[in-house]
Image 1 (cartoon, rainbow, N blue to C red):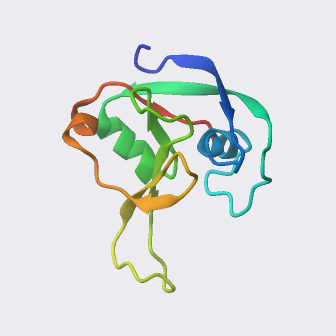
Image 2 (tube, rainbow, N blue to C red; image 1 turned 90 degrees about the horizontal axis):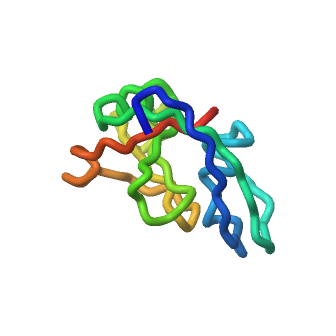
Length: 126
């Protein structure tokens, strides 16, 4: 994928708990951080268009702007990273990154050396 190129792809997965494709399904439905989601008990096919952005520096810029970013090199479908900004109810005092993992859980995330130097970052649609 070249920088800025829009790439359509089909992600197929079995999601007995609605988690394996959660990030792509949520983003496709326009809900980057869906509070609730129906449980899926069958094979699900989700088509998404990813905008290739290449570097982590660009991915971080998009995440700071409220978008979800992902890597083609990640093993599980549906994973993405987004920025969180604490409010007065939060225990966190500064912005941070979270990863929506393959199980559909949001966990604090720090990029690895491989993530920092990778050139396969893409923006998920809103």
